[in-house]
Every structure is written in C-alpha cells, then in structure tokens.
Length: 370
Ligand SMILES: NC(=O)c1ccc[n+]([C@@H]2O[C@H](COP(=O)([O-])OP(=O)(O)OC[C@H]3O[C@@H](n4cnc5c(N)ncnc54)[C@H](OP(=O)(O)O)[C@@H]3O)[C@@H](O)[C@H]2O)c1
Image: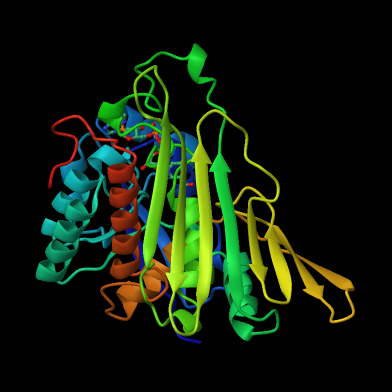
C-alpha cells in the first residue's frame, strides 16, 4: 500500500476551537478508516509564545517536534507548514486569512469565514492569485451523518423535500453578562447570526444548503427569496433572535427552509426537521455535530414506519474537514467540492441580506472590505 500523504498544519490561535481541532488532528485517521492521508501538527502560533507553549503541553502532550511561535506571521512563513488553520474570532478572519494566503499557504478558516461577502470575494481572489487551497471550516458538511442524510434526501425514497426547519440557540444569560462580552459586543460581530459561539447562523444554514440547495432537483439555483427578521437586545443592539426563510422555487423544486438562531434560549430537540412528500428526517441536536437521526416513512395507508440511525467515531468530528483539506492539497485542488467557494459565498450573501433586512450594521472598521 502507498505511503499516506502527510499534511503539515500550522495553527493560528490557541482558543477553544483551535484546541478541539488540534486534538482531532492527533487522532489516528485509521480509527475512522482513513488510510490515504495523515496529519502532522507542525507549528502553533499565538499572540504570546507562552500561550503557544502551554497549548502544546496541554493539547498536544508536550510534543517537542511542534514549534511554538509568539506571532502568527512566523507560522505563515514557516517552510515546514503546508496548511494553516485559522481559529481566531470571525472579525479577524479576513486579515489572518489574507496574510496566510499571500504567504502562499493553503488555508482552512473557521466559520463564519468572514464578516461579509465582500471580504470573502477578496479572499477567494487572493487564493486564486496565489494558486492555493482555501476553505471555510464548515465541519458539519463533512461528517458521516451529514453525508448519509444527503444520500437519503437525494435518493427519492421520501419524495421531494418541501419544508426544512433548523435552529441553533444557546442561552448566554445576556442580562447578567458584561456588555463587552463578545456575544453582546457589535465591535466583535456579536449577536445570534454571526457570533463566534455555538449559536450562529452557519449551522441552520448548512442544513438548508445540504438538503435543498444541493438537491439535484434544485440544479444549484440560489434561493428565489430571502426573508429575514432580527429581534435586537436593548442592551447593545445586537440581534438576540434572528429568523430567516429561504424559498427555493424552480421547475423541479418548490421548498422552503425556515431557519433561526438565538442567544437567550436553549437549543430545541430535534434541531433539524426535513419534511418530504412521503416522510420526515429529524436530526438530533446539537445540529453542528449530530450523532443520530430518525427517518419516518409515511405509508399510503396512513401508517408511519420509523428508522433510527446512529453514528460513532473516535474524536470530536472536526477531523473529517481536515481529511478533506489534506486530500484536496494532495490532489492539487484549490477548493473542496463538498464545501467550495460558491457555497461560502452564498452563505455570506444570505447573511448580508438578513443583516440588511434586520438593519444590523457593524460599527465602522469591523468590515475590512465593503
Ligand atoms: N467549529 C466549531 O465548532 C466552532 C465552535 C465555536 C466557535 N467556532 C469559531 O471559531 C472561532 C474561534 O472561536 P473560539 O470559541 O475558539 O474563541 P476563543 O476561545 O475566544 O479563541 C479565540 C482565539 O483567537 C485569538 N485571538 C486573536 N485576536 C484576538 C482578540 N482580539 N480577542 C480574542 N482572541 C483573539 C486568541 O488566541 P491567541 O491568544 O493564542 O492569539 C484566542 O484564544 C470563531 O470564528 C468561531 O465562530 C467554531
């Protein structure tokens, strides 16, 4: 058997999700039956070299082969790094990704990939100019459960999809936290739609993209209408509850996605419901990394047959996107076919439109490209 391709990672930031991602990079790919690629963590970049060292000790078992850097730039220019993972807050994604791409590195950037679609267009153009791979870390799209849901949704066994509901919420106790907390601070892109916490808009949206936008009946048509509403908190005027409806209306698909996210509520169960002509798929929360779903088949005699599917693997679920990056880099691909540039762009355009309708403007300077 051929030697697996090794992708050498440089990690930007030492936060919560960077730790989750690195822990998953360290899981043996064979535990998920992946034998063609392996991951190597080569460098950790932090604004403080002490934090980089601490991160290596606590997250990577003190592995002395990993370099600790006190600046992000040193990682961008490290010749032993093939791909950069960016785990900073989303208001920094544009600046960090731009620097990494300009240094000629392949980039995987946390979600939401940028603050708006203009920033994303600029990054895509830079990635193309430098001939490197670029992807948003929409990890849910690569998980085995998602691939299975997509297969069933497209098989026709339940008929055409008609209505999808998805919600991701988290109760941040907003009345009792400082107004400078990232979830409430507009200067940090706070609020439910784009916040860097778990209750952000990309997750409900990814299910609409998988089940409706990607459905072959839709022929990759963008939604024919986007209707959004934001309920803002009087504390700082960021969105407390956001809902948005996407209508797909083409010759072969007539369906709606009703999506929502909140920062003052716990997530509902199930988190996603996809209703088809002849059945329903109900996906258990948390919708960013679900482990089970139920299929209901509606019989013509009024009976309902239920089937449950469960998924288990070693690790947190972040490694599937890393495998995709490794394969794409190995094969010379500049974007993923599962979550490529056009899907991230569709996501950011939808968020721009929902913010426009909800009259949520970031303070000056947050958006680096307008
Ligand atoms: N995929 C997922 O499941 C998931 C879940 C939650 C969040 N996210 C995304 O991941 C990103 C980071 O979220 P997180 O929860 O890991 O955040 P976090 O714990 O606050 O970590 C962010 C890191 O970014 C770096 N950073 C650089 N400039 C910063 C600044 N001015 N203020 C604060 N930190 C700064 C810091 O690392 P250094 O000090 O080492 O430089 C910090 O540790 C966000 O884009 C978020 O949307 C993804």
